[in-house]
Length: 101
Figure 1 (tube, rainbow, N blue to C red):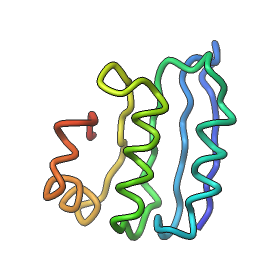
Figure 2 (figure 1 turned 90 degrees about the horizontal axis):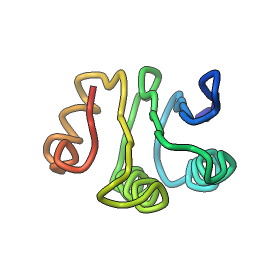
Figure 3 (figure 1 turned 45 degrees about the vertical axis):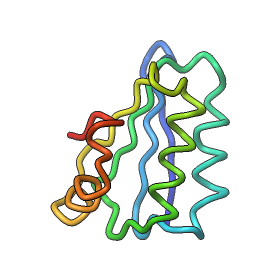
Figure 4 (figure 1 turned 60 degrees about the horizontal axis):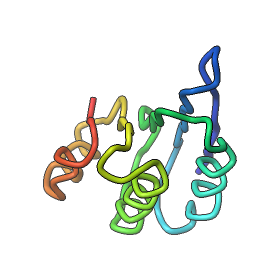
């Protein structure tokens, strides 16, 4: 599992890329990725193009990110989800809480 971050040119969008398994072992690295972005971030994009597995603890981590980013007003996109990841997000009704692309 690898988690990397990058920002857009003005620093207001933080992209967090998750490669490999997204499970409890990712907890600390994922939290550091979004908390390290600072409060100047207006939008978070979680790039899941390299995510091969997603479990219930990962769903909880995404909810923690949403709360950190502002709850109902948060701008969090789950991007580049493969078919398996998208199915888990759909079953969990995460499409009502996040923009899933």
